[in-house]
Image (cartoon, rainbow, N blue to C red; front, side):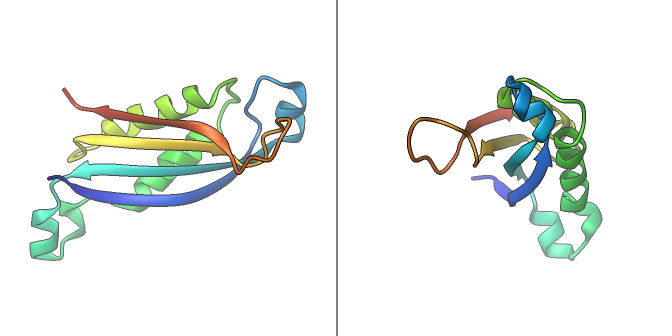
Length: 120
C-alpha cells in the first residue's frame, strides 16, 4: 500500500467558469490533493530531500488556480494532476476541485470533480 501526502481544503478566489459572472466576479474554489509515493526513506531519515515538499505542491496548485481562467473544473484538476505527477517520487495523484458557491436550483454543499492519475 502506498504512502500518501495530503493537502486538504486549499481555498482560492479565482475567475474560472463558463458564465460571465464567474469570470468577472470570481468565486471560491476548494482543492484537495492526495499524492502517492514511497515515503519510507524520509520517515527513517527525517530528511526533507527524501519526501515531497508540500510547499512546492501548494505552489503548483496556487499557480493553476490563480492562473489563466478556464471554463471547466475538469481542466483545472487535469492541469494540477499533470504538474504534480511530474514531480520526483510521486507515483499517483488524486485531485479534487470543488465550487462551494455554485448556483443550482436547490441546496448543495459544493459541485466539482475528482481525478486520479498515475505514472505509467
